[in-house]
View 1 (cartoon, helix red, strand yellow):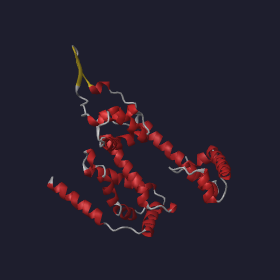
View 2: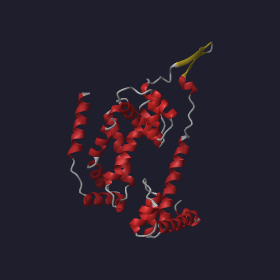
View 3: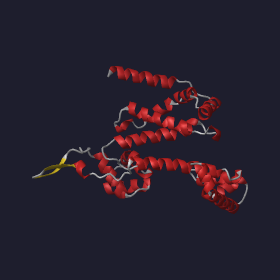
Length: 287
């Protein structure tokens, strides 16, 4: 145990002392890894960002899982970010990697925090990771609020149903039950909780097939985007491919055109994309 803790401290100390990368140096390393598969470049790039993994993992230590496991899962997310990063987009690697690191750690917590998973949609994840904080905040008033009112306000803040909040609240405040615990007894013996669990998850081969199909669709979309000119591409990216989703008015001001003109260009671009995506020759080239 002492050796494990000592090793962990040395690892954390080494990660925190790793030199920062300048933007140009980071770009060179990412390009070497993407274009040439340079593993030495990958090691330098990821080693320099392990402090980011540790910092993000530390935010989730109150869920009771070993810090070493959280760091390991964050490292998996860091490697995934390195595999998907596109240096030519002129985005800092740390900015891009933060999302993958956090998502990998959160998925690990949802898989391991309790025997029964709490849901994997974005809304359920937000509920799981914010319920305790919001409940504590609402409980700071001069007079305690009833659970029904607390659930209502949390549901409104996170965009989920009050029923979802109530179920998650009960789950987070209650102990886990063993799947081997008996639930009934009869002359023929006893039944356990696990005997009544039926998984609705797809089979492993279906999951793999969905991942492969998703990667093919992504490649086909990127190939289709090449039919757009620079202005069409910018409008589609900022209107349809970004999380915020720019408005017609804001894009019009940026591009120096009316919002109606932006709408026309966007409609034309979508038609060009649709035609490119439906082109059977383009699809065959990606298989």
